[in-house]
Amino acid sequence: MQSALQKTSFLLILLIGSFLYVNFILKIGDLSSKWQLVIFCLICVPVILLRLSNLKKILLIGLILSIPFTYLDISFFHNPKIPADFRINISITDLFVGCFLILGLYKIFVYKNYSVYFPKFLAIGVAGLLTVSALSIMNAPIKLLGFFEWLRLLKMVFLLVVILNVINTIDDLSLILKILLLALIIQSFLGIAQHFAGGYLGLGILGENMDIRSFATHTRIGGTLGHPNRLAMFLEMHLPVALAVLLFYRDYKMKLLGALAFLSGTTTLIFTLSRGGWGGLIFSTCVVLYYFYRKTQNKKLLLRVLFLIVAGLSILAALFSGPLMDRLFTSDGGSALSRIELAKLAMNVIKKYPLIGGGIGNYVFYLPVTVFPFKLFEETAKVHNLYLLLTAEMGLLATLFYLYLLFTTLAKTYKRLKSCCANFIVNIFLIGGLAGLSSFAIHCLVDYVDINRWPILWVYIGLLLVANKLSFKWVR
Image (cartoon, rainbow, N blue to C red):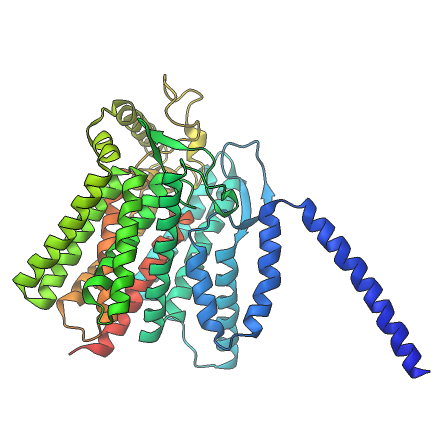
């Protein structure tokens, strides 16, 4: 009797399970490709985690690798009628950050003496930035949009907290270094493939933009970040780290990986046709070479390295001289005039709301209906200067808080590099991170990103501070 009951129960469960499975497959088929990929990842992740003993390692890998794939998110509220990204969303990166936050809260409650690392100067800068940006919502034409953008900024702060507290050993830094190189290589090869495919690979699900941008007769590529200038900024922050690996790492396999990352990344940077990115690469390369000479005190070795880098860049320039020459010497007056007009519009908003700005994320609503007599930009064009945009949206106070936390991080790194650290991995992060973050700060004078939408900025701020902290354990 019991055996028959067990068989009946098994058949019943099998029938119900089969029914649910078939309906699940049919429902997935009706969803967009992005949702299908998200559901697939949600199914696979628990299976992968069950087979991996090192949860921290897999979460770190997922966190860093997911950052450039900007389209992998789930929108909970969206209003397509408003000419802005009017939505609240959770990205794959947010899910990894959330996992780390849950693990951190568990440690705090279980281990009473567990402390959170967050430097005092950073707490002041972040608290000021969050407070002033929240106040700016009072002036926002669409306050709900301002609130959504403020939540994005809060997510960047959570990401920073995770980076500062999860990465706490040299082994962690070594792992992150490999992941950063892998992320750079992935974006580089995608960008190179885009260039030779005419600008689009059909990877819209990963963030690739279907609107192909061009200059003269040359296609500009954006990787999975959706825009050539965004990809250029991503590359210029990673390339100094790759160069530092090539010069300072002691293992030849890692040196080869660094060389591959630097060569492929530089090639992709050329294809973005971003002059600001090119200038940033030249600046950051000079910074890395300066510290290479300081560490080695060998002029002959420096000259050899310099010769190899110049020779390599010259070969790339010769191979792709067409887009380089056109971008550098073809008249681009229309773009320059547009940027001047956008800067004037930003100044008008700043004059009206000097202290707390016109509302975080609401800059586009201060643009007139017809911005230019010629259509070079979309109607939602933003001023091509991060500092003007930040001041227009959040005011002078927010800009000062942002500059305070950015330049204090750079100053602390510069100060640490004056002393001798015996660990080459720490040195790679200090030198490469300083060069990359500095070139990004300079590039932002002629271009912009929304700091609440640019997680790699907060990752590098966190990595520099972690490297600073670990460097004290390795002082000679």
